[in-house]
Image (tube, rainbow, N blue to C red; front, top):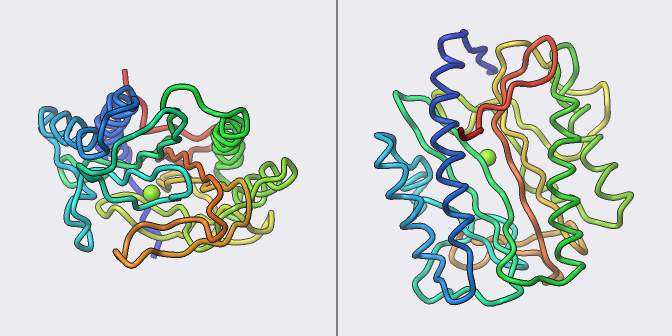
Length: 250
Ligand code: MG
C-alpha cells in the first residue's frame, strides 16, 4: 500500500533527511587510507545521536551497525568492522539514515579512498549521474517505471551493470514502504507517481555483471564477478514539478 504524506509529514521527513545527509557527509569525509569502517560507523552514529535522532539501520532486521559500508566489489549491506582497514584506491559506499519523531531518512553515496583508478572514478561518476537522471523522472503524473528505465539506459549505454535484486522504495513512518522503485523497467509502466509520495531512489551500479550474491554473513552483498560497484541514494518527495530532495544538509 502506498501511503501519501501530508505537507506536515514531508517537513518531518525533511528533518530526518537533513540529519541523514549530514551524517553521510561527515562519514564520507572520514574515508581515508588507514581508517577502519567501524571508525566511520562510529562517527555517523555519534552525529545522528547528537542531533537528537536515532540511526534507523541499527537493529533493522538485526543489522548490527549505523551504516552499511561496502568496499569495492561489495555492493550494499557491508557490515562495519574494526578489522576492515581502508586502503588507498578503495571505493567505499556508505548507506545510512536517521529516524526522528517517527519519520525516516535514507541516503547513500560512494566515496574514493585516496587516489583511485580512472575506471573506478568513471563508475562513481556514472552512478551519481544516474541518480540525478532518475530524479529527473520522479515527477507527479509519471510512473515508477520511468525512473528505472532512465537509470538503466544511462548506465548500460556506458557499459555498466544495473543491479536487479535490490531496489529503491517508499519512505515514511517506515524505512521501507511501497512502492518498490527498481533501477530498471519500462517507461510508462508501474505505479503512478503522485504528489505526496516519498521515495528513495538508489541506483546500485557495477563495472561488470549486474548479478550479485549475499555472503555467508547474511548481509554483505557482492558482485558475482568481483568487479567494483557503486551506490548513490536520495530520499525525495514527489510534487507536481521537479522532485523535492529531502536528504540534503545545510
Ligand atoms: Mg534505501
